[in-house]
Image (cartoon, rainbow, N blue to C red; front, top):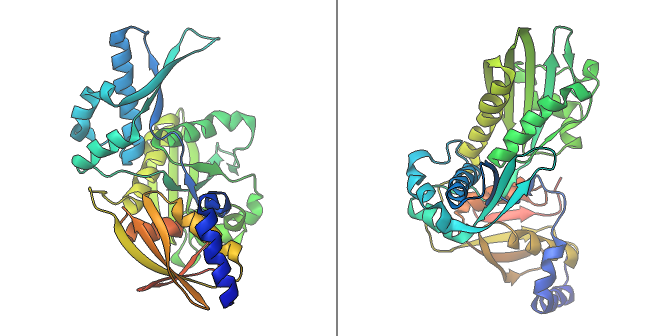
Length: 356
């Protein structure tokens, strides 16, 4: 419980050191701020002006894939942007390999100008806050399922990582487990779903993630593989199957289907809108440092312009959040973390005392 003298002290601290709140944000979050969304590296044939323009256009296509959540980069809708790629270029540099003759262009584009153009075209923008996604990969080469932690599987895991990075999705792999104990059934009954099995064995607690992907890869004949995988988000499982060459399955099938589904769930069209004022209450505070941490966390959320105190009571503090997110988007962003537990949506109330 926060007594009156403590509330007054909090208010004084906030007025004086509001600029220092950024360093107090909670570290244990299930979302990640993805860096370099507006930067891409592409292979270039040379350094002439014509080759620069071609490489910049290619780099912009890669950036659009990341920030729209669309594997096609929003397709023909952005052709006018691709044609004028040089006008969005903020800076660029060349990367030359000492081992090969290959030259890459690293291009960074102006975020504000590019976002403005996308919103004018009414194309959704996927912000930097993205769910941590945990991959559990099982491989069967005819001798039962193996955990691909051995060096021979490094190229396989690299395929996953590189494609996920290309799509702008933060992923990690679970460490080696004892499969006699894990007993994961990819397509089990409703009574024993994937996420429940995963958490039952302690993997979910060890690797807190918003999304869990379990991949079953089986080599059948020649270069052909069978794949079945499941994406679990918020207790809902989406299941997939495919067959083909390994690199095609990993990139255009598994990773792309996962990112497409995540974007479908979490991405809401961001049309040009005025800042929206959203009221919320925070209960369960016992120390001023907790309150400062909450302010820091909310202030750092993507498209949040301002967080202010509207009232303070003994057991509840009311906040006013000015944001260019919709109400749904804001609640979704907060849900990525495990710092606040939503106890009411109308009115919005979060409980800090009973968080995971």
